[in-house]
Image (cartoon, rainbow, N blue to C red; front, side, top):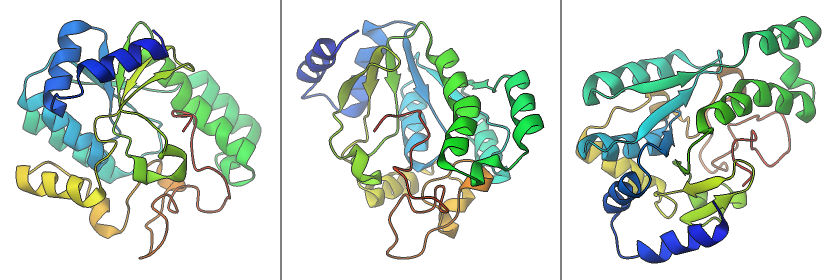
Length: 233
């Protein structure tokens, strides 16, 4: 896969709707298209697209072992409502055990390096396993989620994982996402109604106040680009 292929896909599908693009990708890359969900608002919209059109796209999630109960609740409601299978990937037990045995359960609070180490073990390694052998990775990223994502494209080559990333909701606003959820009765994480915009692991996520940056609730104790390593932007 390459940037050339990403550009070609963007050109070929430029007049397609999101649902038409998803169907096209499932046809062009049979059994090689996957969608990663963390059950946030954007991911729930994409899950609804896939389920509504009965598309043969594998949906997977990463269970870090430190998620909110509300995240598990919406996970359960989603599979019940849409009758979809969501493949779950966990971190390697030995790596988590070694991290806790050597640094304790809260080392991520001590430094950005420690936090990235935890994210690497709990997210990046399982993600590599989930993406292995696939060619198209569908995400719920939106440009307005952070300054780092403003220059992203609808289709782009991810050199870190050597595949094409498709970001169908890239230009959507948060109100547009919420409107689709409301209009289509899409299951939603209860934390979104409590000020949580971006939801990750429970120790690393808080609600944001009015006027705060959309990523302020992630790793709020540190100053960084607010990324965990899954996405380089």
